[in-house]
Length: 415
Image (cartoon, rainbow, N blue to C red; front, side):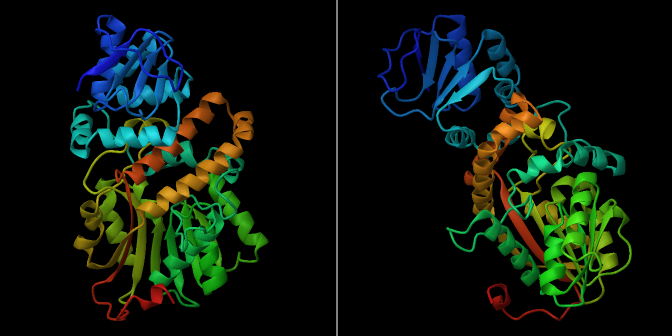
């Protein structure tokens, strides 16, 4: 696909200038950057002079990306995946137009098989290790940014995982509570049962299981900030006798439980640790035990976007369903049900981004402009990843192989 090149920036909305020869070095570099993005139909601007576009000049582009200077352009050419995110965060790249739509176009322009090929060639770029010590460092990097920051945009439940929207008009808080109920119904939770939750976040699900289903919950987490918040909330809601929030790694879970639940932790476990996680689950479940794992995933194996792994979620890895089965298959655990909530996560992220933008002045006060832009890009890019099918959201229900106390239908999910 040939690029359209103009030596002068046109006002937004005006007809493009007639194409000229791509004779300048800057224009050729901009063309190369467009090609590396799969000839994404955007206008690339270098300063105020050079404009390059791939696609039909009479059509509507996905947006404008303004690159501040040649040094930034070189940086993006050396490593487009990390270079764009870092330059955007630093204010050296600006996006004119709808950021989410532009990022959706970028995902669609680059087929999944091509993205996997590029990632495979990146030397030394692997998720950071999720050893006992490594996991603490990785979790601290993301989840211990401060409870005030997350309270600005997660809603009253402080649930930082995909919500479940029973109706299109449901609010974020309603959808998170519906997700809690959806999980409890899937594991057929009954009063007096014991639950182990691995990776409990700010404790919303654990407290919901105790308060509304009469369960006794041991919830494990290695984020100091989240555990502190959860314990305070449990005391305030009179649930401290039913929910024990334990600041410890899931690998140190002992005892037995009727149900094992993990919502949003598997992404931080690492595929190499899946068999051990499965052995732990089988050890804590009795003959009639069951459980649920809720995780971001992929249709086929692939690394997390390298900019997100470097700056937002160190050590994170979204597995494919085949990779998830390494938890169940070697350990006598039967998969009962798989549900994909991909579009629910896109909806959740749109709600989060709206709240984030409404609180952006406070975020800037807490951190700085670079942090504001970095998290805006992360949330917008995550919406695009789910709407384009680059990422999935799997809920997998399972039980011990010998468990015959199984429902005959799925009616209990919607009662």
